[in-house]
Figure (spheres, rainbow, N blue to C red):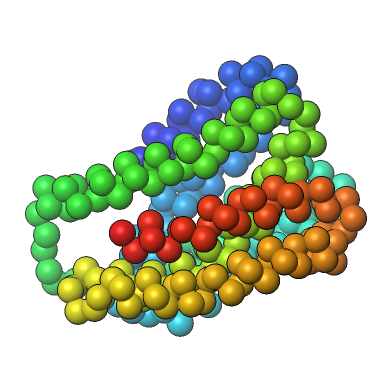
Length: 248
């Protein structure tokens, strides 16, 4: 229901977004990409059931197949000359692949016999939802300002630098927190243990990425994207503190 509501807002707001940036193509792009919100919302239950059952290997397989499948689709569409639509359809494909795999992966898991009052669930969940909403708005408002005040090239460089800076954080924290959340919720483990583990895994990777950012970007993305390196290095400083926020 929330996913459908968000998609409705995106569909209604698409003409205004296109007018704000002066890019008419944004309207059909938002209508297409918004469908992924609904599909991703439908994935929430499957993800939660696998995490609650600590089926992390199965969840990892789902995530890997989804990532590689969506990437293959995007490359194929780009090769066929689809341009920006290859990126939009990549997200939609990833959501569809994820939903299909989660439906298959959870087919043998029986629902929990435990019952929890809806009031208790809401009292727990609304804080995480509000925190995630504030974080999302804050992380994306920079792109809104840059896209309006500067050239589209600046948005691309900043977005690419932000994406590369957040990649180690998403990878390490995602893996650790999938294991940590059930243990912390049951009170069977200390947050400090997971904080130390995350820092030990994350910080060396950030140091390597910061030191060799130019060489890595030039090798992976080519000479065109080398100008995103200064953004990447600045944003890495903020990522250093991300484990404290995630454990909290």
